[in-house]
Image (tube, rainbow, N blue to C red; front, side, top):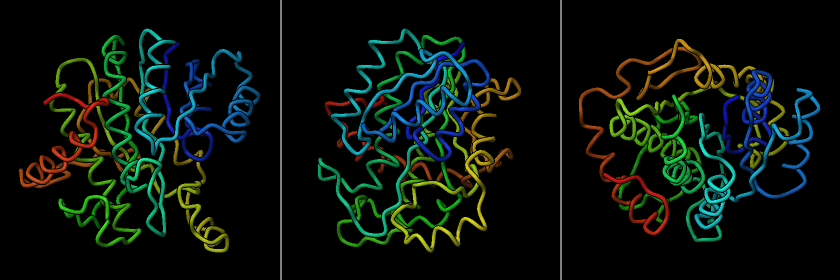
Length: 282
């Protein structure tokens, strides 16, 4: 049995991924916002897989809050001696600019900054696993990113699609950077675009728009397949620093080394915002 941490696992791809990995005999640690929705999802997983109730743990955290994330890291550290798989699945899409309780732009905070903080905080537990894997959910929309280093949180100008694309590009930068830092150290870091799925990440859209979109996008269980594969396939053992579109590995995500300049600038701001919290060393 492996210990698997999945953020945003109360619905959508995260819930479908949790179900499949439970069916493989793993233990799931759900990281979700506190509420009846999360508790109901846990009960649903236990009922659907007929697993023991101890196989599904739940940690409550608002992923827009650095303080709550740090508390969640502490709770996981207290309960577990190692983590085998970390799946950073949680994501949001806001049609209008929203700020978190800590005055951070919501899309940036949840889709990017939380990934860095959670991964960094759980590194001691990941290092104790025989072969740990970190999987960051991404999106092909990263190609539309227009990162402005002086305005990473879209204070001067907010456009929902660009803010979302920027968060996914920064997540890719982070995945590649951290994989290089931990090359040969027993932890793999990969990103995956699982397809466009019907999830609550786009709940800001009007209901009629979501109904129309649902006719053209994958159900969560289909989108979960490439995530489950990255988490469990023996064929992918040792593969790190890669980006997948569904099950296809993309070669040369960025041409040349120019991306590293912008990635370094993003990293400096990331370290500043996470000062006093979890943040990977150089």
